[in-house]
Image 1 (cartoon, rainbow, N blue to C red):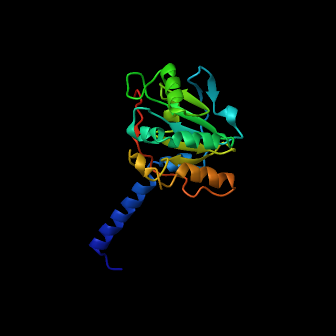
Image 2: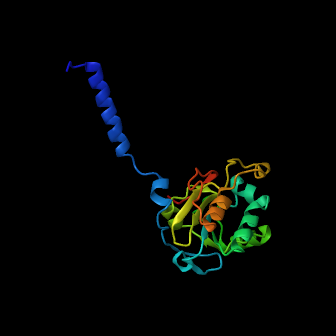
Image 3: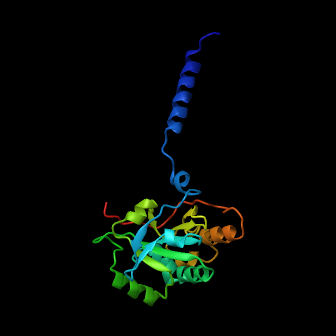
Length: 210
């Protein structure tokens, strides 16, 4: 065989590329969707201890929340999030809203302030977890508000990502949007695979302490 320096260089580059791909860290999708949902314990806005394990056998929705975020306000001012909460909790789904903003950061609220907000907005989650130390948020690699995670009755993550396919703060964009949360819950409850198990979440960044 005649040695071709250009072909040899291309072979080396290709080998280098393949090695680089192999050592890339796994994505959130690889790590979480389809895997067992990490257990946690947190205190809710009424001072009650809530753990994921206590809801085993039920569908659970985790909703990362920041009432000052325009993208979150879009879904609360319109009543969209409250409608989703009422619709799915009426079907036996556990809905846990999670506030991971740290004290002094935008989005942080006390339990009293949050309960006042829930009443004002007629919100209806099962509970609101006061996660100011960010433990639950980091456990699920939550990045934005809102961000939605769905856990099935076997305790596995079946959806992680955006609430819908309209990444804007405009209320008018809710109409006609493809709601990934509804899609995931409806499909799984019907015994079907979740059509879109992972999407890129949109919204404000979660304001962790670190």
